[in-house]
Length: 484
Ligand code: SF4
Image (cartoon, rainbow, N blue to C red; front, side, top):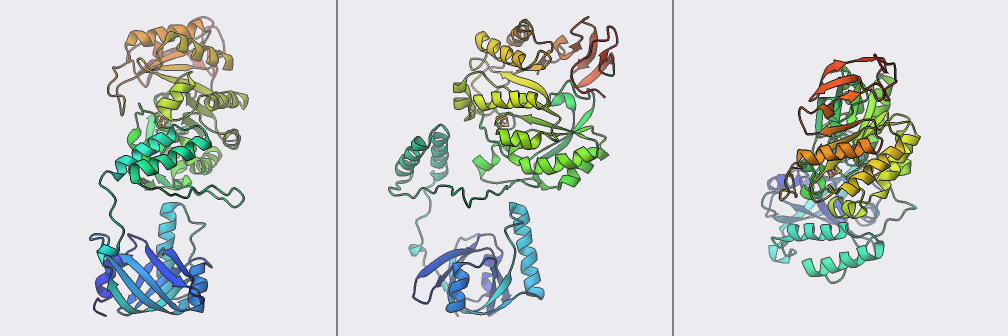
């Protein structure tokens, strides 16, 4: 061999998966990825054996294979001709590869899928440097931009036929691909795997008023966590760096935490609740689910800060442990949801109705954005809808500041917020609050009966508290919410 296996060790670190080509006895080729190509000694490598696959079947019948590995810095390709010798199912080599695979599986949320059955040991017969002229042409420099444009187009589709047409047109126009195979989910055997069970991108202790939740344990701390990702792509997103990270950067980041660590973090910080917030909690629903059930056992409340775009099934699954939610009602126009969020209005309204029906404490937030959703008629429709849920449902009307893809807009004038508050009161809502308007009286909670100041707030701080349990200490009227 002109090239030593020793010199290829950077290719065997697992940074780029290797490709294994085998052939069945009748010569039919098969190409598959290999999770690991492990350096054993100067003449041998070991490949992970995870599944009873075609690769496995072929190699047992015909022990010769070719393995293509890639040097992650220079991107040079090498082809190894190998001869299968044996499979080890115990011992140091097997244990090492098993631990490596478990690490990969934990990072990718595939722990139940990736399991090592054996370490297949091969003798390396030859190593070739693959002539770069034989490799596919590199992607054009603007490929990512074109891909992003394509995804934006696809996101605007609302039916399957339109989606297929647009996908094919975008492939042809953007990438010169004239023939494509569209894969459809086979529901009978389909299984989805979450990639965000464990990597926590943000974990901090916030005042519960910051969520905003004003009627559940006012003045308490809420242990707040998030994973990256969102099912919306709001052009005005305040947290787009993390909510759009998987979509825009193609990566998932975060510190690995277990549900127990989150629950313990809440207890040790003296928080009374855990908030699943900053991004969209339904994206990390499985992690929230396991965390919330533990939290319940420890006497903590669970809060979703959500865009409300979830199925009835998800809501039903959450209802045993979900105590409260702040739901964004971003607009009362389906067009707004389509064009500015890549979503739809009606499912959000259904979620709000479903939460009320299930006895979950609900507060609603609307970010009022100049020219996009600040029309008085629309604000009236939002207020009327919230009123239909119950006059005790708090409405937080928030001031917008330019962010992300809405840098061209001006901040919301305070008088627009004041007008929205007035519209809320006229609709019969007992509790309307302003957001992002420091120092206003509209941060306070008043008794709906005698107008006594019940909870005086300054920013996120409670300055006055005139409740006895959940009752006004002046006239005894009950304030809706969770206070003891
Ligand atoms: S729903 Fe919230 S987190 Fe998701 S993109 Fe919209 S504003 Fe950002």
